[in-house]
Image (cartoon, rainbow, N blue to C red; front, side, top):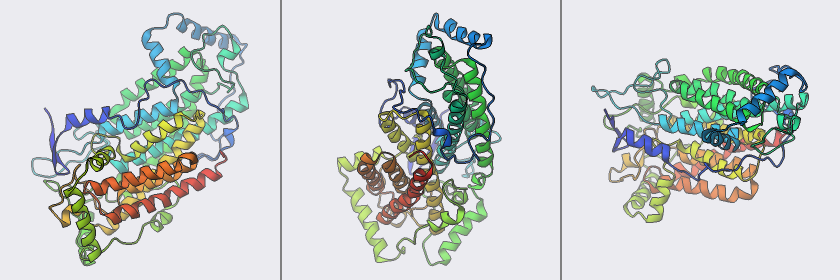
Length: 516
């Protein structure tokens, strides 16, 4: 039976939203990408600064068997036997995975976020059920991967992949075992050749790390995740890139590093971000006590606020006191002339839409059934990183910087939202009709603006020749929320500044992590 629910003032068919979200082509197509051929293998990346690991050798990787042993020769013969009669599907998976491990697992993560980015339908009594991590397949399925949850997921997975690859590069240089095609010239090489040592396999490291984190974050999708792992490992052997012992060592290392991030995720306070009725009521009464008009849900029936305690989640780039210090000053008072002017400005925008503004609203909407604003910026980054021919470890480092910036931006943004508890434009003027719905959390500051400011700051550092374009994109994403009737100008301008301030912490880490 189809589930219908009232979301952001509109009636939506959940199934339709899911399929539309999964098929949404945000910035480009990656099905036909060429195989990854790094311009620089970054052989010394084993000395780069990790995020959680105490050092690259924290988890031991045993020395590989020699390439002249019978066991290794048997593994070479395994490659040849598998290559003897490749099927069309096997050729397809080789091509797919050869585009890059970090790229592909980020795409898989985005797909899972989009699949689960659906608000639960209300109960018969007008209350709302909450997803339960201990029973992930029961309705509503766990998780509801809303923007804060998604931002945290992208950050956890990306940071773990980076740490695991720093460790892998340390052992690659230490053991210096040549790739199988450099050992046996008769192997049919189906990926670009490289002088990078193959032990442990970087692809297996990424797959092992991603799988452990994704199974924690999306526990109802474990079978699908494991299928992708097996396909990825098989593709590397079929292609002639790795022997089985390369794969096994890489996957084991990836899982060990992942468990350190799993432990962190279990204790980062995200599990308490929903809060409770007493806390929700206090937010409202505290706002009234300050003489202000509190935010309230405009959904029917009223939905509990989205993750009001997410501001207390543990950040990656700075400590909790720094997170609080990044909270901006207050918005205009609700009854002030400034707020009346800002509300009127939004009313005029939605009353007099243009085709271009409507296009911008929908391009940056990233609502239910999509992989959220952080996922949108991941897609933008991936399109640009592909053109740079980065090594897997540099891909991972850059995605970690981007996603830690946006994950921490979510924390600061949500802390600000619930500290001020400011009403939406549609609450102050019911004549404002939004184009894409009304998010179920306070207005100040804009999440899109904060995510975008953070993303533009770090991406502009990674690819400086694109900095101006990234800033233009961030400004457009920010303005889209005004054009759509969702945010006031102060929400957006301050959000961009806060996001940039958070992103600058990622820039400082980039300058000092040893990769530059």
